Length: 297
Image (cartoon, rainbow, N blue to C red; front, side, top):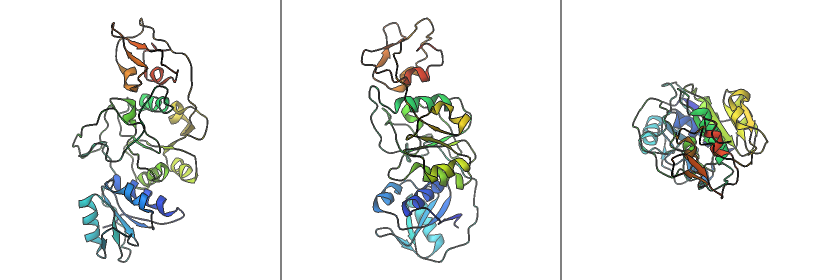
């Protein structure tokens, strides 16, 4: 059975992204759209519940029986075409999400390599500091992403689970360009996800982002100035990287290693064990944001 039928004021690729958001939280969706080939390619392998598309797109298997279409989509973890009549919608289960179920980074592909002074490092460090101590299951859906330096291992849990990222680049759970983060987040929220905050990092604030906020989600808009560390207080924020000169106070450092989770090549352990900031530092503030001891100022 199908739980949601996606139609309305969005463009075709946005409708597909909403359907992907529903599917990745174990929902079954029928999308009325003619998405672009690039959008369809991004959706391949991102399906978990079921994702049916009407009319049937070129290159996808097409079905007239709704139960057969759902079964094929779930078995192949891919969208399928559907040409039968619209079925009634029936809620099947609670919306859920798992960080690395069976396939690590199923919903986060590619990304940029972290470099000294990379403009995304402070943003990801700020979100890391906000989320690492939570006891729920947040979902971070982003139009931009840093690529982790090491692959993540699956945990094989079928219930929602949160993990402590090994580096700040792991904070993004969903990155499927060209599918918009705002549209995917909207699908997650439409599905009734309540196990943790849904956070969308968008290149620009648009109607999709505004709707995400209205439905209870959180938005970081990269085209506005602001402080993402105030995300939970303000719900929608911009992002203005701060630049300065940073130093390490060894007297306050207890060698916890949190600052090294930025994976920034400008900070490294010293022979004494506490971090040292190298001359290549551009003052992006990422290491200071994740330091909970106040040792980096």
